Length: 543
Image 1 (cartoon, rainbow, N blue to C red):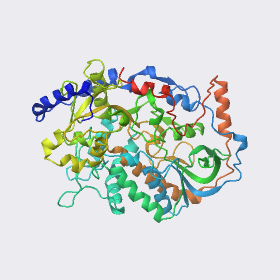
Image 2: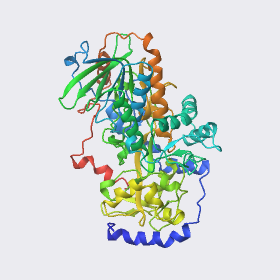
Image 3: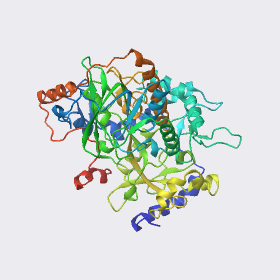
Image 4: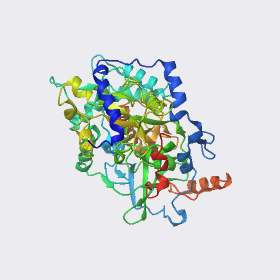
C-alpha cells in the first residue's frame, strides 16, 4: 500500500465505518439548502478571483482572472507578415479541433457534400473526449423521456440554460446513441441486448450509456476510423492562432501555426467550425484540472477578437471527485459512475456528509466545506487536502469482480502507484473539469459572427451555470452534427470575400486605448509548467 503513514489512521476509520454506512442513505439537499451551500463554498461564487472585462462585446461582464488576462492580451501573430491573400489551403468547411465535436462536425459536413479540412493542435483525438469515462446521456429507457431529461438539465443548470439548446440536446439524444452504436461503438448492454445505463448525479433516471470506464476512448476510436476511411484531411500539430474575416465581417477561415516548422498556415474557408474545447490548462481560480494538455481557451480568445458574443464565461464547473493522491495523478477525474455504483464520499473520520449523487456543483462545494471550515479533510504530505471516495463498497454491494469489470481503466491507473481501489479508498478533491460558459450559439451552432460556428465545450448556454454528468459527451455530438449539417446546407449561398486580419489590429487598438498592457500574448497554445510559480496555487488549493 503506497499511502503514507500519516494517512493510514484515517483509512482505518473509513474501514471501521464501512459496514454501518453500506446500507445508509444520506438525504439530498433541498433547493434552499443547495443555494446556501453553493453561495458560501462553490468557487463560482467567489468574486475575488474574477474581474470585469474592459474591452470587447462582453465589456463589463465577469470572467475568471486567468481567462480575462488571456482575452485581453495582444495576438501572437505579427500581422504584417501574414499573407492572407495567398492561402495555403481552400475548403468549404474548416473544423478547428479534433475531439468528438470536431470529428462529428467534419463527418456531418462531408455527408452534406462539403469539402472539409480538420486542423488540430496536437494529434487527432487528443482531447477531453478521449478521456471521458462516465458515459453519454439519452432518454432511451421506457420509463424515461426527453421531457424528463430536459427538466433535469435545466434544474441542474440553475435555470440559466438557453431553452432552445436544451431542447435540441435532449430530443437528439436517443438518435445520437443509436448513431454511435451504428458506427461501431460497443456500448455496454444487458443480457437482453438493451443498453445498460446508470444514473449520474443530478439526473432522475438511469440514462448514461457507457463502455466500461473507457467511453470516450471507444467513441474516438470509432470516429477516428471514420475520418480516415473517408479521407478527410487532418492537419495535426497545427493550432489555430487567429480567425480570418472578410471585408463584410464574415468568417473566412483561420491562420494556423505549424508546430513542426514554426510557420503560419493560412486556410480560407466558407464556413469555420470552432471545436477547441475548454480552458482547464489555464487553471482558473488556481485549481488543478482534469483537462488534456491543449485545453487553453484558444477558441474563446480567437472568437472574442472576431466579435463573437460570449455567454456565462464566469461559470466554471469543478468535478467533485478529482484525484488528490498520488500527486502524479492530481486533478484526474474519478468517474461519477463509481458513485452511481455505490461508492460514497466520506471525510477523515469516515463520516458521510453528502448524498453521493448530488449535482456536481453541490458535491464539490460540500467537499470544499469539509476540507475547509469543518477541518475534516485528509492532509497529504504535499499539503493537499481531500476526502475519501470509498470504492471498496462497490464489490461489497454488487459482488466480487464488479469494480474490475466496470472500472478496469481506473484500477489500472491507481495500481501503477501501489493503490488498489478494490480494497482501498481513493482520495479526492474538486478539479476544474468543464467550462460551463463559452461562445453564444443558436440551435445549429452558429455564433453572432456570420459563417462561424462553435460546438462542444467552447460554446455556452447549453448547460447553464452547471453541467450534469454525461451531458457533455451528448452535447458535442448533438451540436457537432447540427453544425456540420447546417454548414453543408448553406454552402451554395455563401460567397467569401477577401480574408484579412483587420479585426485583430482593431482589437489591439482597443486594448491600448483602455490602457491594457500585457507582456504575454494569446492564445496560449500550450501551458508552461517549467517554473515553481506555475504550480504554487495548484498545490495549495485547500488553504
